[in-house]
Image (tube, rainbow, N blue to C red):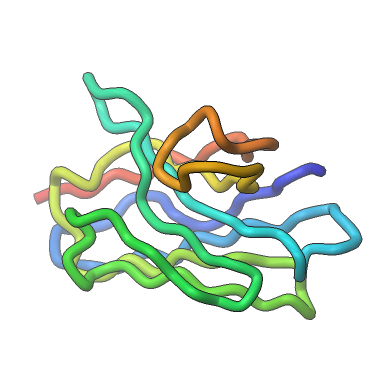
Length: 121
């Protein structure tokens, strides 16, 4: 399954970005999907997860600022990020969940190429 990411870029602190991830798989509606990020100097970390039934889970640091959604008719998962902070700067990846812990990088198949999102003051 290929994951094609779009969106993101450069934004001022307090602004918003929307990331998109479109998959090539024929049964997207059955996939659990997630977003991870890698900020400078840290390991890749969990951001948000969405189940096939659109149940969502978020990392604590999102603090109500991020929203993950999906559109099965478009084979696409989205990450809406509001009230962005300098600390949100990093490379954001979408990925397809395999099994086990949703918080662990090792439990995911198939990764997008990542998009660099930079928040400036």
